[in-house]
Amino acid sequence: QQQVKQSPQSLIVQKGGISIINCAYENTAFDYFPWYQQFPGKGPALLIAIRPDVSEKKEGRFTISFNKSAKQFSLHIMDSQPGDSATYFCAASPSISSGSARQLTFGSGTQLTVLP
Amino acid sequence: SAVISQKPSRDICQRGTSLTIQCQVDSQVTMMFWYRQQPGQSLTLIATANQGSEATYESGFVIDKFPISRPNLTFSTLTVSNMSPEDSSIYLCSAGYWYEQYFGPGTRLTVT
Image (cartoon, rainbow over all chains, first blue to last red; front, side, top):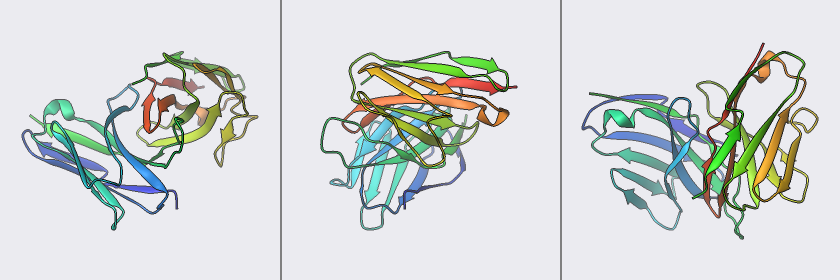
């Protein structure tokens, strides 16, 4: 019930290509869907996030697409660059009613390699 | 955003000993979280630390093994007690406001 399923496990893309990572969830109490980028030896960094009231959010080359009825969301990286090579995690959090953060449930991660 | 620091950044410890990891946030936050990340794996929540109350532990994690302190709104510690090689992992703390959550750089623990 609490799982977030992420695919693919690894992804190799040519420079300039589009990287697409998909996630699916079951728990309808999830209300916030962030993506994190993690480089080796570093903590995860918040990349972009979406809430279910919109179907798409774009920030620069990064876009989240959200399908509430299918309980799926995906990350698209346009014009992928070698510097984007990292591990990407999707996550989900239940709704909150105060200023307090809530715990995140993470997907299994996707190791992205962008070839020069 | 929140800037989170952790100490130590890494340590090598002997079996049976304990290590306390410190987490400092640059601003006051109500909730702080501790995660474990095995090399090459995803993040697993250990516990949620709310200032002024006992930490809430996830299934598979117990207070005797992972005691947590939360003395104020900017600081927390996680102790890994009576360590075994299976405790070798990266330990991460996080905190945030509303929905946005930020992570520290992690503590890489190796138990020999």
